[in-house]
Image (cartoon, rainbow, N blue to C red; front, side):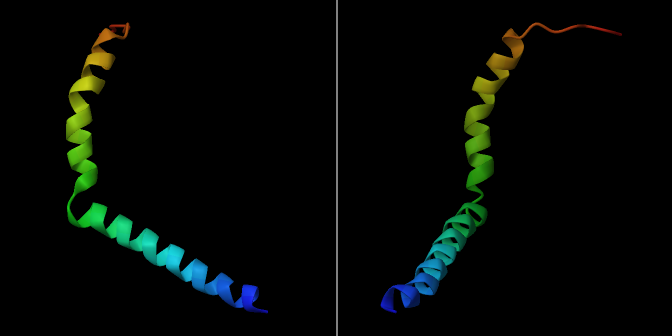
Length: 55
């Protein structure tokens, strides 16, 4: 019976941990900071691709 009682507690802690991580990412705008760090590398990769030029 004690194992059954731990399941909601573990689920609650997992949801709380997920919320803390996602809130921290949102609050400090870390997603856009990571995107700005990756942008030059993605731009180089995109520029090396062959493109069809239609006007």
